[in-house]
Image 1: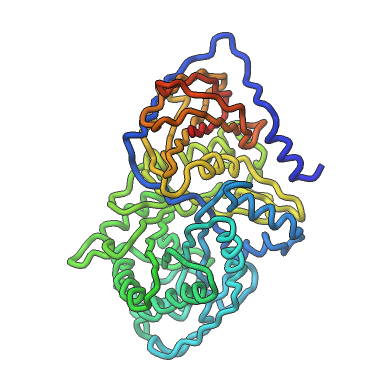
Image 2: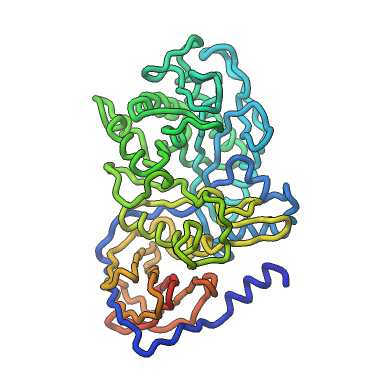
Length: 473
């Protein structure tokens, strides 16, 4: 059976909840009158030439290319991701998985006329952005892992090094801060002139790490120095670009950069729109010390195990239930406004992507369906609202969308079926409830709808080790 047919047939299966003589009953309260952070969206990246995988580099057919794009970016036919993180390349080579630079070779000095190159491809990411926008993308985040090597203290895009000109980073070639700001703005201008809007731009990725691939070191003070230059350059360019910083390797590491961004008579934080961090070395389970929006912009299971079909087996790092909880905790405990996995799709038998492509076979993982349980129903502009449960084995989150619909996510870590008594306050007369189920046997399965009482209550069952999203409309 072709994969697409197989998946669609699963979506039509009825739910069979485990039998239990006396299911425990849990009370869930959702109050849409108590509102928290705004949702900007969910998404992924296809950096380091992964975009080429989607466009058939390893045998994916044009039909399945469209299928993968729909799975990721179509609200109607897939998860409806609205944020794409494109890498701003720094390499003078396309070998391996390097990302092309728009200025591959040094112009000679920071003040020399730059020699920019634009190929309308950008390591496959430009056509990907076009396709994503055509399916409902709202936010394109251009993020550089490093400045070109000739702008850095180590004269290498890889292996760390600092941007020439920031504190404690003096180079014989001079101060490259303005040239790097011009470089980033030109990258965004090339996109815009070619019909694709870049909304957000960032200049660092995991600046705590000195690694063998594209990387650049920075502390908060050094980042602040460059942000002031970048902000002035953007203003002079006339482009409408928001600045993100700093994609720390972990949430604690990003927190540690904030004092440098907030210090001085001209705090760099005043020029930022979003604080960004990753989940690798420390997870997003607390609110960062900032008034700005925060995004979790990269995290994945990089252990090497391949668990695409498992929602829950033993709580492993690649399982769907694990990622459902990661997302929920990030929104509820860390107050993030966006959550991005590392790669959306790649030709690989690992968990570093949400969707595996193997030749012409497409395998959406349970992680993907866990993401879709959130992203499909908590749309940009929604507000997270108060949601509580009386049992720690059933955790909840909820979002009030702009159209008045309320999305409620219930995640069960229990090994038996539970009954929930749910009360919804502030639903503005909404009464119909549409549930969707993901577990080991179901992938975003649409269950039978039912009507909520006039008092805003309903009682239903939650299968063991599952996630159910209730959309109240």
